[in-house]
Amino acid sequence: MPTVRSSDSRGGGAFCCFADNPFFVLDVPPTASPADVLAAANRWIDALGRGDPAAQTYATPVGPQPRTEMVVRHALTRLRDRDARVQFEVWATAAPAEIPDEFVGPMDGFSGAPRAFGWRGR
Figure 1 (cartoon, rainbow, N blue to C red):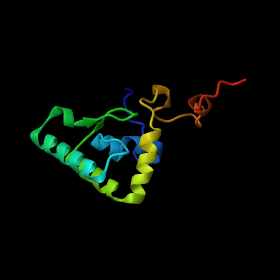
Figure 2 (figure 1 turned 180 degrees about the horizontal axis):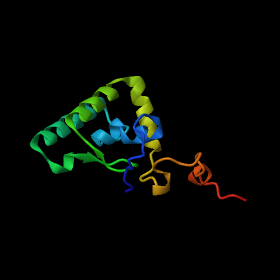
Figure 3 (figure 1 turned 90 degrees about the vertical axis):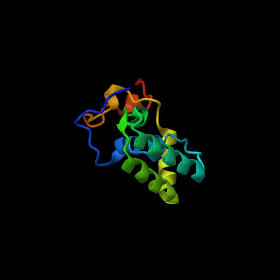
Figure 4 (figure 1 turned 120 degrees about the vertical axis):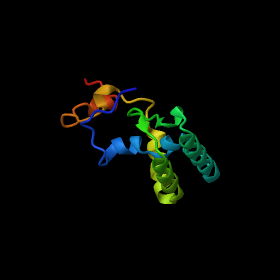
């Protein structure tokens, strides 16, 4: 998986929609019920409290991200908001398994857009 570069901006945009997506934080599918989301959050909080190394990070299409109790609690809160949850469902469903290195970080005017969307030229 590509690593996050220091030039990445956590201020918003698609990067945050993948990196901070509550479904990735809690490792639950977008179809998870509210009870499943709550159970997952409690499992992660317990694992973090025990110091489980596997709980320290979570996988995203833009690389592993740090998981803390605060991040888990924030993810749970965000998924309780029905309007916000729909947006996170869209991003989690649209997320590729992995984003190639050339698409992580700043791009020159998004010159990679045609290739990213499958355009092969003429």
